[in-house]
Length: 167
Image (tube, rainbow, N blue to C red; front, side, top):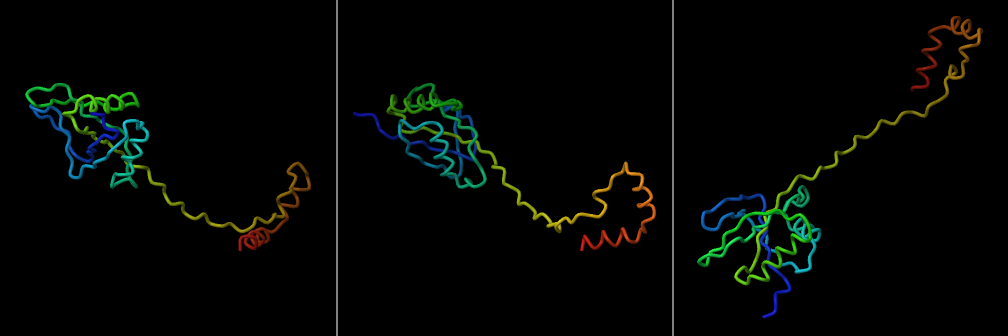
């Protein structure tokens, strides 16, 4: 019999990881996702596929994948431990384990997610009026006539010219 070209992966998320004395580690969640994946899928492609299937895909993203590793077959019972998928080699090992052990017709992953930072709406910047040159912009502070001109100028005239520019 030829090995399957696609493998069933059961995805658990927002659930629980528990330990059972007979089966070892167990994953559970309210609404598992069932995916068929090609044996040649990469870890990046798998994460993208899982992200697209999550009901919270707009607000969460996958940050970690845990795999239920079969460690013993005893009296028609399989005992599992958990391992993290880090790279394509890990994923290839997971998929080949299914192919080499026909009694395992699927594999289970537990997905750990994190919130995607949402961009904050930008508050509109107030529009300032076009800056007009003030009569005092080009003053030479080293010029001795500056001090006499400024001191003789009326404070009301300075206030009036500034308010005209701002209105």
